Every structure is written in C-alpha cells, then in structure tokens.
Image (cartoon, rainbow, N blue to C red; front, top):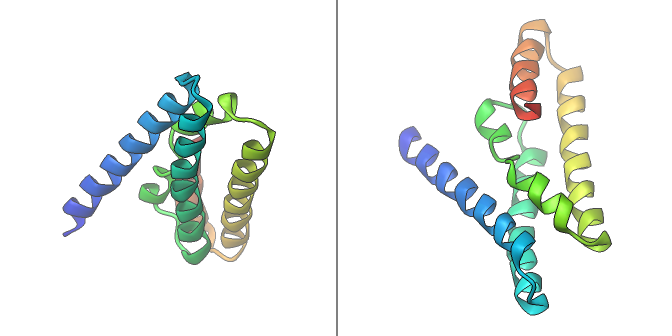
Length: 118
C-alpha cells in the first residue's frame, strides 16, 4: 500500500511542477487565473496536511517542490501573499514541532529539512 501512495504523491508533485511551469509561461490572463486556482488547491491542501501532522518525514517535505521557485518568480502580489503565508505557516509548524522533540527526532527532522532546502 505504501508504494502505491508514493507513486500517487510523485504523480501529484509532477503535476504541480508542470502546472507551475505552464503558469509561468502562459500569456493568456484567463488561463493563468484558472491555473492559479488549481495551484491554490494543491497549496491549501499541502498547508492543511502540514498543520495536521506531528511528524515530518521526507515524504511530506517532497510536497514542497521545485515548482514553488517557478511559481514565486512568476506570481503577482496577491498570489505571492497567499503562497508565502502558507510557506510561513509550514515553517512555523516545523519550528514548533522541533521544539517539542528530543535530540534524535530533531536530527531526523533537520536532515529532511536540509533536503528540502537543497
């Protein structure tokens, strides 16, 4: 069952990255609007997932994909506000979770977080 879930996550991540790229390259404002609404579904769902979890394994950090850098560089002010607010919420959650963990658990979270930053 875990393998099937990993395949689904990989497909969702791939779809998100492709949609971010399409968003950054399209000139049609209506198409861009529709793509952003779709991207917000992913972003809001990812935020919800991070807010509800108490462990941060690498599979969750994989959801913070390279598509975000593409998206951030091509978004307007209102979109940036919403995206950055979600990313800040996730970082706050990781920080508060780390404060409650012992040294070994913190090291594991730190390794996963470093993978995300690279």
